[in-house]
Image (cartoon, rainbow, N blue to C red; front, side):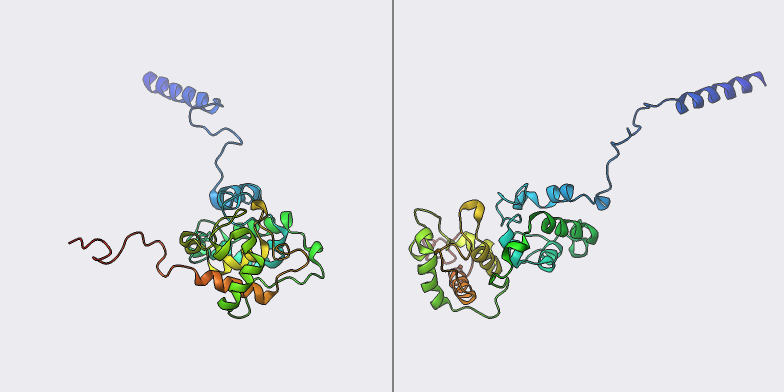
Length: 245
């Protein structure tokens, strides 16, 4: 009986000691409990984790088009941004982020990102009354006319035939064209790349903005320069390979 009481007393003291220990090994410190990824709702955190690697830490300065560009946000409305973030853009490096499309973000998190981008970086008032080109083309462009449009608006920077000039690099290089969709080309022609010094559709020739048809035509010409089999690094015939057997 005495032994049993001693054991119970020891167990009780141990339990009291554990209950009174505020820094037991492995016990989470208040404020340091990791957030459940699907419950993160802070725009800054979501943007940094999912968007900044391509679009830049503050919406510009990355390899992809700037999101902190009022011109881009003037032509790409909320629905366009949400569709791109949800489903990605086929044929480009833009992946799908929504869980419904195989990504990691909930629909609510996509909404936080899209609305955060527009609230922080769009400036709709400065374009009121402006004749903005449509985000998407209403019909196919004419590549033959696009060659003339290119010579008028683009060649002073990108050189004859788009192969590069003193101010800008080639825009007909196969690897570049393989990584950008026709819509991506159109977006760049309209919005420019201000962080790289490339003007928007109004700035190539001061006082002479490009028309919607000219934009469609030059995009058609650029698309026509895309290699049929982009990225093919080796010759595919024995003759081209030096009759290797």
